[in-house]
Length: 425
Image (cartoon, rainbow, N blue to C red; front, side, top):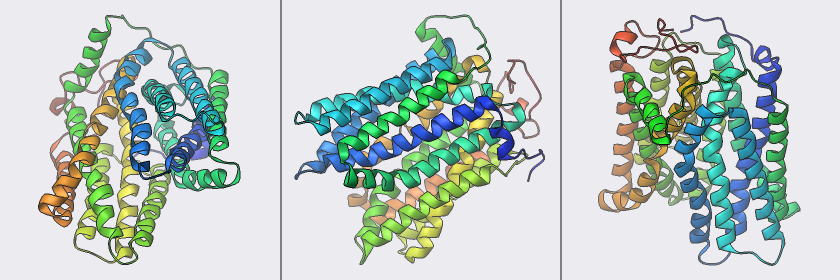
């Protein structure tokens, strides 16, 4: 399976630049995870609580999506560390202000939604810069380990964040919980302020639309890139059926709330296990392995559809998230190795946007589809989409690391970190 030397995780963390980045991102990941639960608990009040939660969380998600491409263009023009620092400063201020609003008597849904939109926009600037800055903090041999270590931090935060948020809400209150979340972003700002990176390669600047078009061209001219993005978008679209129709089918059975909680926790544990596994695996054909890992994602949907035993579903949910975590580390590493540094943030923004843009559509369509065809049928179709789309890309599409990948991929061929044509890695 592997043809490379496996650098130890501790070796990667010995690099002071990456260590600072990892500490800051680990702390702020906890802040992000706790904020989601704390805000949800704060807004559960009265019969319209679902609508209130939807307005606040939705405004943040939409705002982030809107500013992703802008953030990608700017992160290829300006120092990425400074963009990340500014974005985290905005998120720090936004969460502290939200907390103060909830501590006072002047709570306003509109004000909280506006602050959620502002912090979401900051996330749109932060995300492309954060993906593209990683290669500047480690040597090439440690790149996958770096991505895996960042994934471990994010997955642990997602596993522990809800429990931490609930504890804070019950002990010090929702307002102080959000203020403390803001402090985590302040600590991230401190690590970014201390971080010293090599000078970013300069490039000829055009208009915003020209820069954006160049980013799209980087994706369009690489067959392995746009085909994978298409499969990932379909996978995320289908997975929304799991969280809607799948959750409904499990919860409406006897003892369903307890069963769904087990499924969710099993998935969270699987995600952490997958991130840890990504520290070890070094496949010769990373994107083929990545898509085979994703193809496993259809299992829990199919098992819920046939009303399998809950423990079997828990294991399948863990396997789905294990595969997703392994795939994420391999995918980020492939992009960082085979896309020129001067375009990396724009490609990262497009990657995130295309991979997730269909998910809201799935959320909206899940209910009508389940009513029209039945929840079990909707889950079966979604399971097929998740499995078949990834298997097709894994088997049919040549990618970096495959024999003949340059000929089958783009006209430009894989590009190394210096922006020069190179043999497939």
